[in-house]
Length: 355
Image (cartoon, rainbow, N blue to C red):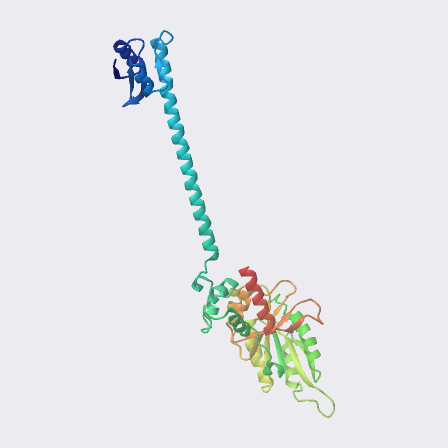
């Protein structure tokens, strides 16, 4: 009685060797692949084989060499498939485990980011917000007190103050109002509105309107105008409103002629700007150095809104905005520019930008 182990390139060769050495009643104890070959352990001792393998493969008439080889290959392949299946299941389980871990990590990261209190320096500063709103860099550089640390509400109020003229004794005591402006700026319409506006506020003076088409007549009226308060005859003090159609480059010459006729007269220039002008255009065409006090009036506000770049441009000038004007009706639509209104407008625009 013997137990032998045989290695061969395939199961047929291995079984052929076993049959030669143990005969047809050889009992297979085990089969496996080793280094690319088939290794079969067999015995001619039935008890020994049963002890080592509960299911021996008996070679008899029913299992010729070719059939046995096929069965053996099937068994080896089944063994390999089970091993491969188990390996794949382990691999798949491991991958799922890793995916679950990564998913948990992302969830923790998301929670951390949403709850993290980022440092203040990462937020927009006041200067950043003002630039985003539409204020130009050149404008902001004129305000040394405005920096990124200044409260945005304080900064907006300062800028609103730099735009709005506000109540002015010089303007209230003006004797001659010269309304100037480029063609299509709403100059004549505003002049008509302005005389009605002034008459509704001041009943102690007679307001007379002229244009500069007949300069000789205009200068004669100025020379003879009543600047004194009401006399015993009941005649009121006069105020003249001039719709000046001259080019703005020639405006200072007209002002000189007016002052030569009545040196004691207080003269104010109101320059109309059609709303919707760009920052660059206002800077280029409105920065006039006039001999008399100048104020601005934004017109045609019934067509579109005042823009932040327009506010930015006027903020750079010594002269400020005195009036807003809208609606085509001559009797209505002119009103003083008010600080609170401009400040509220800027806050609203900022909120819209941030949201």
